[in-house]
Length: 102
Image 1 (tube, one colour):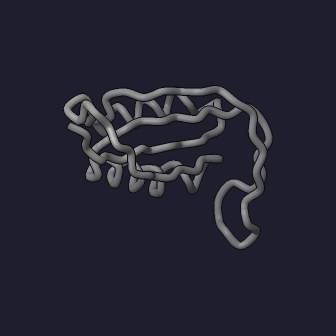
Image 2: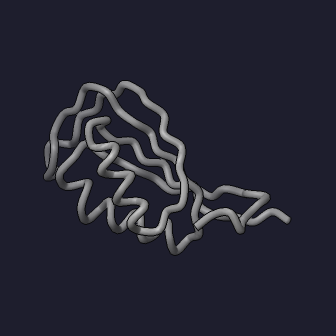
């Protein structure tokens, strides 16, 4: 039986990857995929936080219940977004083994 859960995708500067994954585990995230990459982006001038970024990145993806996805996004917004080159989004994911996900 298929269920709709949430796919959380996080793109971050690579050097904070291990810290970010420990933080996710501390929230109760039980598993993820990490894909290395390269990235470049510029933050809008009227937004506080890190400005430009150009370098190695990681993309973290995990599937979770809606309440866990909300907790992850709240943590990212409070702790990671203001200090580091990190952005994230949540989308619906239809999965066949919903009991395997936090």
